[in-house]
Length: 365
Image (cartoon, rainbow, N blue to C red):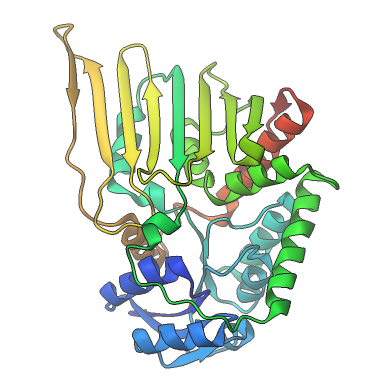
């Protein structure tokens, strides 16, 4: 297979800022044959802008089309219904985060993927960041005692305003109602009925934004054994959790909404007795900004030194699409499969349960 023919379902900000320009760059690997959105105007706009032949408001048109090998799902959450339908139709599927919200949804997507025998990749773009790959290599071969994550998140509007993003007011009210109802059903499936507002906000923040920190943490540290505690404040717009690992190491991870502060800050900091590795990410709504890596350690002379390895320029969004093509065309093992994402969904539920319980929660295995 040379070019993978792909349909885009969901034509909002992430499709306009990242995915469609990147598919244009990767024309030798992909051909976008369909755009789909519940907004007819938006589906047509994106098709016209990037010279895509077909556009529709009905996802079934895309997954049944003979000129579609794969679909990229970046529509409004939850994505479970369309993901399962696409896999049942025999398509390869790239699912933007969050994949879903409940263990039951995750299991359904995984089962559909296993039955289809196609590639099902989750949009965990940060692990394809060349800077993260450097950090992963630097984290191996020594024991981390402490990991700290800080995710200070301004409103996305501050950064998406740097781009031309088209929006239309033709979305049927029924589409919003269906999505809201599906989110509510998934929340109840994950945590039970009558979840307090601050807990549900924290849960969806963990699923939609802090998920980047949690899957990167899993790559470096493996799965934790216990959520020691979780605190939620600012009416659910801030969450901090302490995770414990089998080695005895702890991670303190914090996400906080600072809506009017321009500077986006997201760091992964790994500390051992004689080595520290610090990774700083730019916002996902940027192009051309590199992540940064700092390594501090003691050399053979006992002197403390710091170095900043050079980071390759490839965008992690481009790298993950290259990998998706490689998995489809060459049978390469997927680095971010749906199967592994099941652990992340379960951990997010456990973190929220720790807050609701007011104490430790053993991590589901």
